[in-house]
Length: 450
Image (cartoon, rainbow, N blue to C red; front, side, top):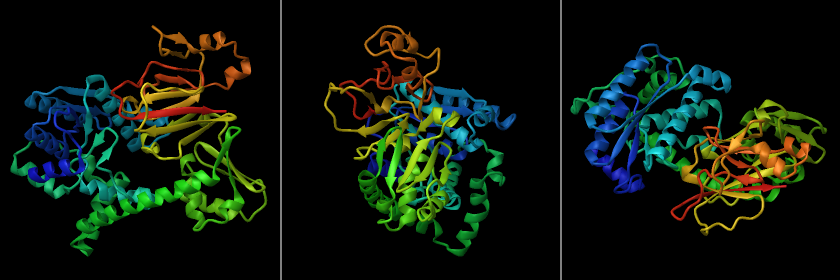
């Protein structure tokens, strides 16, 4: 397993010589095996652990074990404590989603603040297969059937070639101590039910199930790349942005086939599900005025157009931009409608330094950003550190200096990172956070289009 581990890292170019890595360690078998393999390979590493306080007693036991594990390897150990239930409730998320958001935000913060190059997780082949079935059962497009990528920005997963049986064997052969999460053996969540009930049955039906699924996911990943390029070409041609909303001509939609699929992919950035996309496709035959809603947006059929705009209210004030929404060097930017304008976000790996910025534009070092980003309305008391200045200042003072009207102030927006730190008073002034520098390899270009 060790030799295959090294070959996979080399084949996928996951970790370069001399890079410092931060291991995400729960204390279970998978992450314990990851620690052993990374230490054996000689990569400089540290350990990061999250205590979600979801299992009284056990979570503290796991934290203590991970701290001892780090001591045994003589490496730093970073631990975060979270009130996961409160965070999930406040943000209208499931416990699984809340834990995932908290986990990756913490890992990225540790990585940036302590100079680590990569975050390494212990996701393996069984996790990929489980994710495939989770997305399949919940409803998804082709991208949701591609499993877990070996690399996603600063996160790498060198254990994807191995199944749970391979890892158990390695742990046993090397007499590695670990802790078990008892909830993994209870059908409390969909992932657990798939792991404990569905996949064992499929393995009985097909002895080559794991290999077949691995091959299927690889083919689907290749197909998704071709499929995505075709969708982006159509998006660029028929999706228009302006006046704070998105418009799509119905005549253009009716020329597309398969219609339901195109509608879903074109509307997916605004949170519309496959089932809602099917209802929207059916509505093209009906009279004007029909409305559909996602968590963040409203779609209205208005004569010969579909009009998409942010919801008025709490959800419209907090528009979340996940790292996965920003694909490298995609010709069409990710668009966030704001009032009668829009914010266009685009990742670029080819650019000139220093940047020659246009009006209403800001650039940030993509690898230094803490995701997810949030686009929200400004609040009284907001404070930021303007680029080129020492110390912080109130956003309201910036407005006063610019002699902005009350209406303009009310319609002003802020771009923040995962910690709430202001990156940009949109269209007005960028902060001294994640600035582009000569060593920057990838930038996030942000443009405010009125």
